[in-house]
Image (cartoon, rainbow, N blue to C red; front, side):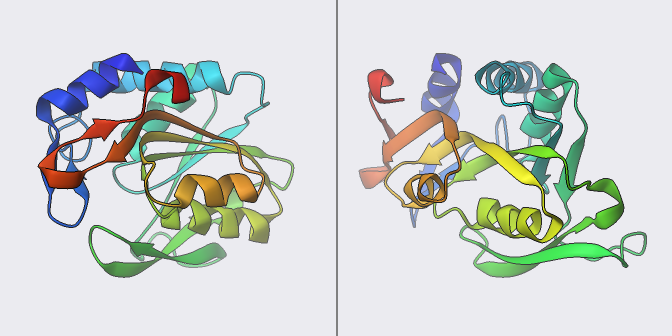
Length: 194
């Protein structure tokens, strides 16, 4: 998605440890118009998948997931990372490790909002090693739902997440594929490869 690539080029900052900071439009301040176009793009790419629900992990996946849900006309669930007073019983849970925060979280989704005949599309802000998506896949397995794909706003293509998900039979659509973050510079894969 050229607009997304251009925005990353304009305001993305490479931090030590292969971390890409995009808090100007996605991870802190959110650009609703850009997220709407991101959601429309995911909806277009997955329009024939029979999606009945969108899943993501709080918090940076929520904006693109909401816009995708709006475009597809389906509900959105975000897996919680922290225990809530209102969300404590009858949960599906999985452990996920955050690469950027260097911490393991237990994510959870309330069973009452999941039906076994659902076709779930997972949306997330980043894909590197695939920890968040794999956590949601574990919950999907527990719940007996079908995951029809994963929509990723920004993929670190130099890390194994994409290949590992496709090896599990999960179609992956990434709107911006980063080839390298070496020397403080964002290098994208060629458009033809996306």
